[in-house]
Image (cartoon, rainbow, N blue to C red; front, top):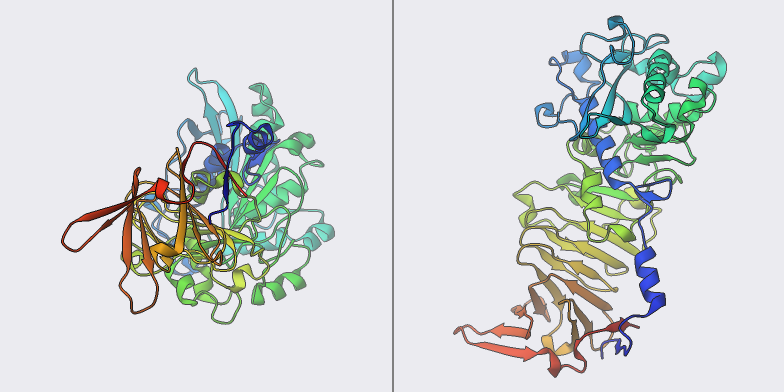
Amino acid sequence: MIRIKQIDDPVIPELEEAATSQTSTLFSFNGEDTTERYSELWDMSRYTSVKPFLPPSPLGGLFSPLEATNSNMYQSIPEGWREIDHTQLGMPESALDSKGYYRASTGLVSMDGQALVFGKYDESDKLTEIAVAFRGTTSLGDVAAYVENLDAYQARTGFSYTDGFDDLLHAVKEHAMKNGLASTDVGVTGYSLGGAAVNDMYTNREENWDGFYKDSLFFGNAPCFVKEGENILNFGFENDTVHRAWLDGSDLKSTLLHMIDNKDVDFESSTDNMVLFSELYALGLHAPLGAFSWFDPLSWEAHLQAAAMNPVDIIGSSNFYDQMSEDSRIVISNLMDFTRDFIWVKDKDSPSTSNADRSEGFVLGTDDGDRIADRSDSNDFLDGFGGNDLFKISGGDDTVHGGDGYDTVMVKGKLSDYSFARDEEGTVYMEHNSGKYGLDTLIDVEAISFKSSLFQRSHKVAVTEDGLVTTSRNGSTDIRPWDEYEIGPMDTFQVI
C-alpha cells in the first residue's frame, strides 16, 4: 500500500513554513538567491575568453583551448550590459592591447594578461552594476601567469598576478564610487586562468585597492586552484581536468603532483560533485588512467565544452533547483543529437565523484528528447526539461519531472504490482507493493511502461486525469480509475 495519508486540514503551518523557506545555497549572495547575477557573470567570463580574435598561431593554439572552440557562437553580452571603455574609466588608450582588452601593466605577464570591464544599466541609462572579467590562457606568455598565481611566488616576490592590474582595478573602484555603487555591486569573474585570477584577487581584496572589493561577489569558473571564504564560488565540473587541479595553489611541488593524478578533492567554496555528461564520459574514456590528468588529452573535453554553454542557466531553470547545494551531485547532459537516442544519462561511478554523497543526486536533461536513468541505491531527482523523454527508475525514492513533451517512465514489474495515488495537481505517487523499489513521484509524466523480465513485452499505460489507460493492439482502451486504488485522488496529502 502506498505510504500516503489523508490530511483533514489543508494547511499545516510547519510543512508550509518548511516549503517556503527552502532555498538553494548554490547561487546565493548575501543570503539572497542571485542565480541571474551568476548567470550573467558566467556569460561575461565566456565572452571575455572568446571575444572576436584573429586565428591563433599553430604554436599558440596549443595553449589556447578556449580559442579552439567555435567562438562565433558565443560572443553575446547579457542584456542590459555593455563594455566600459577606457575613456569612462579615465585610463589612457595605452592601457589596451591590440584586441581591445585591458592588459596587465606590470609583472611577468604585462604583455599577455587581459581583462574586460562591463557595466549594467537600467532603462534611464544609470549604472547599476559592474563586472570585472579576467581572460583565460591565450598564448605561451600566459604560462608565467600560473607562476604568479602561486602563494609561494607571491610570498617570495611580494607580487601576485592581479597586482599587474592595479591601475585598472583602482580605476574601476573610482568609477563605481563616482556612480554611487558599493562593493557589493561589483562582480569579479573569469574562466580557466581567469578563474584563478578571481581567486588571486579574492585573496588580496582586503589589503589591496583600498579594500574596496572586500564584499564584492567573486565567481571563478573552472579555476585551476581555489581559495576558501565567503562571497566566493568556484564553479566547475569534476571531469574538467582544470577545475581545482592546483588544489589551493600554495606551492609548485604540490601543484605539479596533483596535476598528474588530479584526484577528487573537496572545498567549501567550490562545486565538488558536478559532472558534464558527454559521450566520452558515458563510455569511460574521459579518464582512462583513473585520473583527470592535465597530460591526458581526453580529460580536457569538459573544459572546452563548458566554455560553450551556460550551466548556471541550466541548473537555475531546473525544477529541483531549490533543493540543490554546491556539493550536490548534479549531472548535466551534454550529448550530441544522435547519441541521445541510445545513451542513458545517469550518475555513474567515476573517479570524478569518488567522494560524493550517494544519498541523492540530480540528473538534468535538455530541451530535446533524452534518456535519463536513476541510481538504484539513492533517492534521485530526474529533470527532463523539454522533448519526449524516456526515464528509467529502479530503487530509491525517486522524483521525475517530465517537463514539456510526451514523457514516459520505465519501471520493473507488472501494473498489478503497484499502488498509485494522484493529487489534485496531477502528481502521481507510485510504489511497488513489496516496497523494494521505493516511493516514486511523477510530475508531468504522460505514460508508464512496465516490464517484468528481459524477454517480456513492455506494457505501457497512459497517465490521464481520470486514471491509467491501457490501449490494446486492436485499438480498444481500458481505463483503471484512480479511485480503484486504495487511496485514489486526493485534495491534500502527506507522504509518510
